[in-house]
Amino acid sequence: MNRTRTLLAACLLAAGVAHAQVATIAPPQNVLQLQASGTVEVQQDLLMLNLTTARDGTDAAAVQAQLKTALDAALAEAKKNAQPGQLDVRTGNFALYPRHGKDGRISGWTGSAELVLEGRDFARITQTAGRITTMTLGGVNFGLSREQRERVERQAQSAAIESFKARAGELAKGFGFSGYTLREVSVNASDPGFQPRMRMMAQEGRVAAADASVPVEPGKSAVVVTVSGSVQLR
Image (cartoon, rainbow, N blue to C red; front, top):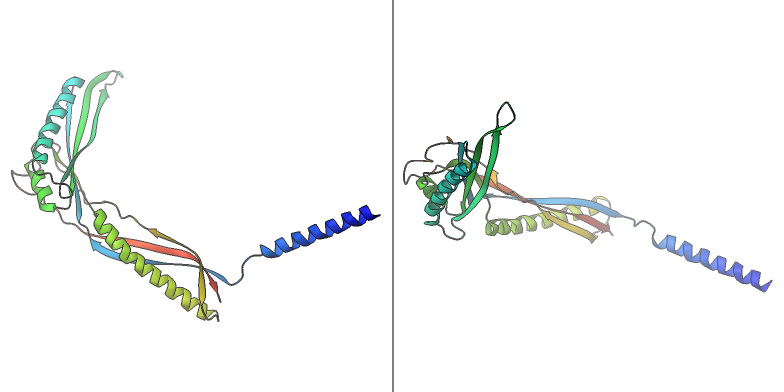
């Protein structure tokens, strides 16, 4: 009999604990989900020029050698004006692939090479590109430097936070509450990256006359920071 009473008491105790746990994890009341964003437009201050060249022939080694010669000459010219942050020089894609005839056999080889000029000194970059005679302009891209992007992100973030706080306060009053407390929040920034301004040139020939600048015109990038989360109305 005593053993039965003990088991019954244990069951009642377990049920009480389970009920308490259910009550504890009950969904929160008067919680509001919302988001706000801040946007700042800024002039693009980073330029990237893609210079390319292509070669074609029946001998793969010869085509590769021609590409290397053109790329080496372009590198030598570009490095004369290279300056960290202002004009950075790097090689891009270097590819060699076969061409097949109607019979399925290799009938020749086609290859291409790429040189990238990137930096904040637009005049230095475009003038350097104008002096390179072994490659042609394949594309123009604009973007934001890391320093510019970080500075603008801070501005957009401040605007987004203030907008989030103001909206939370307005909604709290609209629902009849005196205020709110912050429960959780996340902050996300968009990366505008490079934005292309394509100006394709002829595959053969010079980019421009000697010492002449390639004409470029930057636009603006919009940096957006979004703040989202939940608040407890009180």
